Length: 324
Image (cartoon, rainbow, N blue to C red; front, side, top):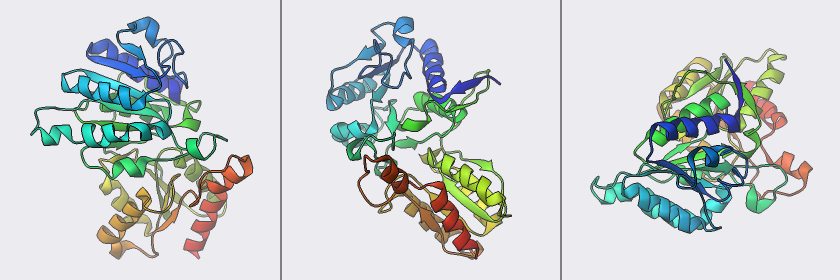
């Protein structure tokens, strides 16, 4: 299979879908002439023109609203936020309009819109630009929330998100854009709400998504040298959530730990822990544990940033304690 970077996989997904459906367009800050803040839309302006790859002013609330209005009239917009930190400016449009118009109109206004862009910690970007907001958006009924961790998943899940008639929050980790991975050459899509076992194991289940998958995989390699067999479940999307894959893994290993980049209070990992204890309690040999970002604003200093994130050492220590 050809090897693509995460950004190239996202680009291919949008290009292929826009080639098939003239109702799809991309809009956001710097998506056109600059070819994307993270170069995800590289070459798309030249290919599709300014009518379908639209540069906007710095006004997230404005262009998010324009996208929602166009979706109500039958178009299928892809709205790029330069970073999900900036989506807070448009949160009223996302929560009170995109997530609710189909329901409040009795199905008269389907909402085939994708909000996508970089999320999480990027690398010395400070407290205002280093936040993981997936648990915020997953809290809201009426939207789907997707957090891919690999180029293959990014391409397949973005295609499914674009084709969906519901608003989708598509969060791309800032540090994954340059990560490479094998991607099938033939056209494919990955259904939303279907997780994947990224590594099989027998001693403990790690439940994770997005960038935290990297911490999980590195920790699993360290622990393997100590004779500990780790199974890694990549959820890929949080709404809809693949509960079945979680329970099947926990029933096999009898222990579960959730790793997430976001803050601990009301993080999505708390919801997963609740579901496991509610629906797989009899299979547990240990309380469900969590490794999250620290409960502090993100530091600018590189050493403090590393300590704030759920790094490999913290994951390994938590798992060793569980297995004592």
